[in-house]
Length: 421
Ligand code: SF4
Image 1 (cartoon, rainbow, N blue to C red):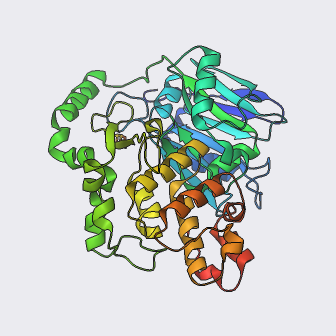
Image 2 (image 1 turned 180 degrees about the horizontal axis):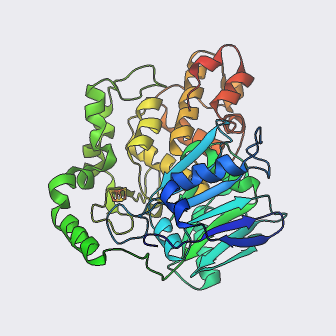
């Protein structure tokens, strides 16, 4: 069978048992891969009414059919579970290198059930899989976790899909981070890993995905390398933020918790401004020549930022920038770094901050609630600090870490109408 390893790994964290399923070709033809596999296993395995943070929830990680083949765009992988943020079907996908490495390690997907009594991580390599203690990793940022696992296993090319401290603390916006800067961000799936005491999945593999027409693929890959500049130069040059000014012009840029669609500071946070001010490098995903990812490394000033955590993309700039009334790219880059280190979704956390700002401006939250923070729209320092507080479940951040819907219910006084995810 071409395009697949032909193996699905099943992990029961309650018993510690690992089993390998080898589905028939009809399964692969029907569900194809990626989110098809996620939907299949979630619909089949998650009991009706399951609590997303209980052992009965199921977490699925899968590569797509093309993940891991040597061509641009083949680096993505998907994570799914019942969402602790929305209570519904939860799915998020991320780029980077983890997905390709996982597939080359000999598996098409992993299905995780139950809850481990102690923190563990899953190590998959060349058709083998084992659970290892993660007691020493618990509490670590994503960077510390990646370094510790690579050093423990003696291989700097190991790729990780992991949670940070926020996933461990069951922050409902927690996400799964690949390679420090690529997030499977949406729907709070990092909290599901945290609830299962699963710190990360580490992958290393040397098995190529079987291809029906390797020479045809090589030819296509060569064509893409030769022609990507004709079609995707702007994506390389400006990143996903390259469309921000157009959205602003069209009245579609989220501004001050979606009260408006145009932001007067758009020209200070657009892709051109990022390129011309704080951009220090560009990054890429597996086998992709476009390198649309931003890297921001700030050594001094109000906001010091470690470039290993990448840099903000459009959604992050919209969430922490215009939607919080902020035109300071350095502050936005700092919030992005904090989110990647602690492992939370920049979009949902940005929405929690803008929600709190609107509540504050309407008097539903006061300085007594915010720990003294002046949460008016446009206060960059307050945005960065509240982001950290959400990641660490500190003060008002503890309430907002429940997600805006639950937080609005607890705040009351009509706060629900300002709640967005
Ligand atoms: S670098 Fe950008 S364009 Fe290339 S695969 Fe990653 S997200 Fe896609």
